[in-house]
Image (cartoon, rainbow, N blue to C red; front, side):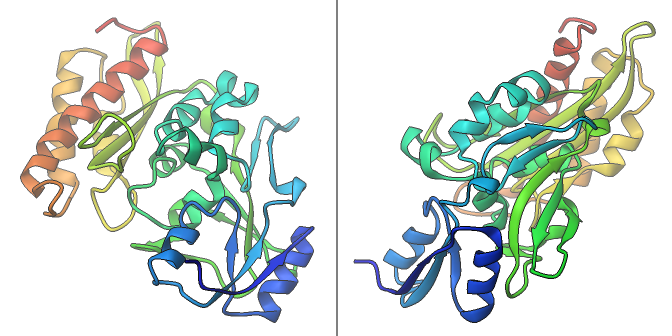
Length: 294
């Protein structure tokens, strides 16, 4: 059974903001793949819901003249994966969200809901961190734009206030142009499972000199929030592409991340896996860029 107090269907962003301010205990719902489960389990019993599912301006992907990519928060995972703009410019994001749940979940679940849930295991999060995504939030007073690494406050906690609505995820042009990315999810099953550990690497290489010019490495389930390995990134920049680079990333990552023990995996196991998947992800980005073959 679903114990829902009231259900409000917003027809616009403005109306959604107004409804959330009028009903401060209400929760936003779009696909419902997280919210409805919590209601059914009794964790959010008696909650009122404000639906943003029918707000067209929060759906779809747009490539702006500036090169920035705007992804509506209400865009489903399936849409993100198959969208031509995503496939051409940032396929790593489409590949990442294509690992969420099963087809039914990907057809209803939204990328905005995945972000706002604040789960460290969210498949979209590591790639969005590595792409330095910006989040556009409406609040009825002009709104604000927040870097994604400032949005995550802790496990299940994000920087949303009363009346706030995440409307768009923005990938600035300078953050993906010339870069290639790869996402690896390690889980207990090959599908229909949350990550035991995940890693998204985005890199830019200079093929003429075979040098790693820039790299961004983000882990999921390696800390209370998605974690950018900035010490590792700094150490790798400027290195020549080759086995020494891949050994270095393994060593540095295992020193930097701080995963926890859980019933899914021990800390020691996650550290071992972390170094391995980071090296594999980086190696794949080099191959995608046409660099030294693995």
